[in-house]
Length: 323
Ligand SMILES: Nc1ncnc2c1ncn2[C@@H]1O[C@H](COP(=O)(O)OP(=O)(O)OP(=O)(O)O)[C@@H](O)[C@H]1O
Ligand SMILES: O=P(O)(O)OC[C@H]1O[C@](O)(CO)[C@@H](O)[C@@H]1O
Image 1 (cartoon, rainbow, N blue to C red):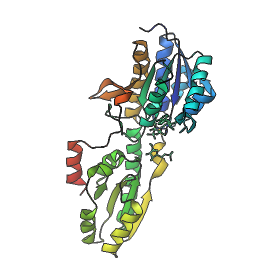
Image 2: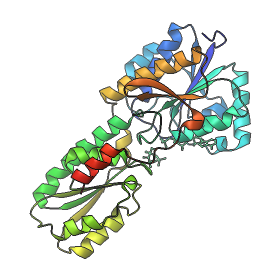
Image 3: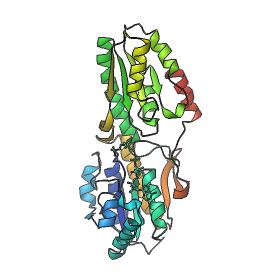
Image 4: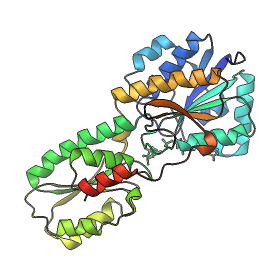
């Protein structure tokens, strides 16, 4: 056990994701059980630079496990991208006697920690928190399951109106350059076509399908925001090959980031939070806690990369159902 750790700083960074409050509760609880102080740092790296802190009280966090968003707030920090900003953050840590950090965010957040480790030698542990599920070293990132649940709930509603009007819908889902949200959502709503950047397929097959679409039913296309064609261009191509279709575009957008976390995300939050504190106490540093085959797993920040492919099984499902 690393006895020298007495004060852990904790922050959420990048886009918020459902389950972040649950992870904060777990960190506070595990720190308390080990007699360690845990301080919340507000607005991601911005708060680390400015010393914008708040206390993490287990009795308050306990009541927020079910809430989306993050009570610590989050940010994308331009200042931390610069060495000057990171030096200022180092000063803040020293002044406040913080001797370990836990960061919850996406791959960008871990790149930030890696850059920070060049000038700061206190231990860092990362927790994957992003709706995109685009990080290696974990089967699930915190928030992904909730985002997919939100997406499918909304697409099911779109189907009701699409079927009533015999309309074609192009539904754009989030994920930045990752198609994970789109493929998972598209498969379980029974979409007629799913377009994701990782598939390596063009959309010509889809145009052939739309050409023969008889206008007597709904036709749902789920497209990831990272797919090169984009919802607008896809819509105009469809109209070119079949001018009789009645088409609408729905961009689900930030609704996918909000809402109460699913059971899976709450449980992930609890597991990741406790594991992060334990790993710091075990003397681990500069690693991300993940979950592979339902087992906790550590990946050094240097090896945490953006996931840019779907596995063979998902690819097969995409061929079978999304085409
Ligand atoms: N190379 C880097 N050097 C220093 N800081 C970085 C670096 N890359 C990213 N960061 C910091 O990490 C923050 C979070 O990264 P980013 O905005 O990419 O979100 P993310 O953590 O990938 O989360 P999400 O997947 O939700 O977008 C950035 O705003 C920036 O402050
Ligand atoms: O909320 P912002 O900063 O516009 O970021 C949007 C991006 O963040 C995410 O929601 C999470 O990374 C992406 O899916 C999306 O492209």
